[in-house]
Image (cartoon, rainbow, N blue to C red; front, top):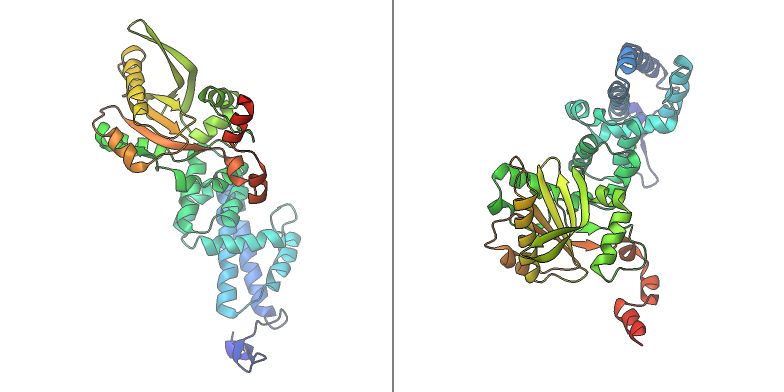
Length: 359
């Protein structure tokens, strides 16, 4: 098609391309739509045999063909409406050819220009989940990261939406820890990715817990949500796990076993900012778990200290010298964090509530 026929001037007199109308591109369009129909007929068996990945690859092919025509021959957006009508007539038994979905096919091909990545990664996840990635995530690096997490964890599109909202990628691998010195390189890399900072406990409600025991109770009452926030692989062992050491009683706040790391994970919760003394307590609990509960095939117990706030430098100095693998991260009540400023200002602070209770 001669693109010179589709040049004109705008209101400022500047020469700009003008998209051809449907009648002008009729012959080219008829050839194009027949090629698309051939692609659908050819791939229909693959779509039936391997429903999701075959459909995703077909959608990419259609989207790429539209992109090529729009970029190469200046076709406008109206072609999508005509395509939707023609494809529905040609394949009435197949769904997915609405104008809205065809626009998504175009966007899908535009956001994923490398077909090899499409085949290896995003074709392995449902179309609806792919739409979440297109609508909610800005960069290809983030899309690939979240797509791999969907495959790894089996997330639904709603769970993916929640994890994107909570900025999981930004928080993963961010805990302050001593894993590189306390664990072999392979285990250290894996452990670093398992733990995050901060942890978002958006299921605690609007009443901010003031004591560790209140946090523990609510976490165990909402154990499914808590496990989702911790990430895949954590198996809940118990709360307030009793340890008897030298005729003294001690209680681990929360004890988990991680199926991929193959080790126990001791979690200590603090409703206050980090203090160096917390590390010594966590270290002792790890020693006892390794001595009493750890199986010979298990790897060293990992400790995770969750605090309301921390100074990174103080934490790093506090961890220095300890041989047990430990990490320190903050926990936040996500609901309180997302309240509008005008509503936050009308709520009493923890200190104000405590003063009222003391009267």
